[in-house]
Image (cartoon, rainbow, N blue to C red; front, side):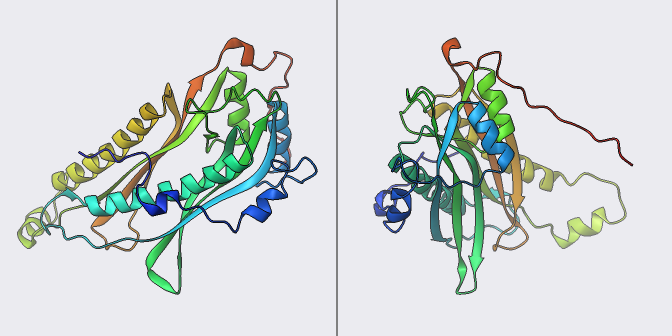
Length: 282
């Protein structure tokens, strides 16, 4: 089972779009007199400040990717490795470019990371992968909250969960993912006839889906290990068919890898705690 590398190789891996430079130059991260931009709600902005962080700028990474074709055996469960690699590389390119924008702002991290796909009418055979988030910096300016490699951390946690994580003495390391595009075998006409009218587990389907999900989770775990984290929170596994037909399915596992901080970086006990108020009005 291949574990995909942490970053794509080739010219695309080093190319950075220049069109964002003028926008980034006018944000708070690059210019003390600049304004910050963010996708934070008012409540999230306030909580971020209580956690000791300030927003610097809204950061974006994008990659429009042509996903190639791969032949699979009609009657066999198998991973479509060419497609798996393409889906992984495209997302990593978008994530890398988002992180490059954060580096331009000297950010300590990126919060509220969202990773999505979209199609355009002018490109029926291509997908755009977009990564977005808000670059932030700790007010201490020490850089202690950055990832072990010295770059900005990435996290898809909500501001509320991020606050609670920091208060507990931990910090995000990286938004990690694992993907697997898998061909679920077709049933023969005889198999379908034998099962008609019976309550019966579809073993072939169960095995295929189980293996595909395990492959995506294993790859996500490998990314967290490579990032030198101690664990992953907020794990989810999404299932999508995209454009390959009903028997080729992508399993995408995502989560936020975290690590423990020293006691000196814990929030003071006097820091306000998030509360939830439930109205009793009918």
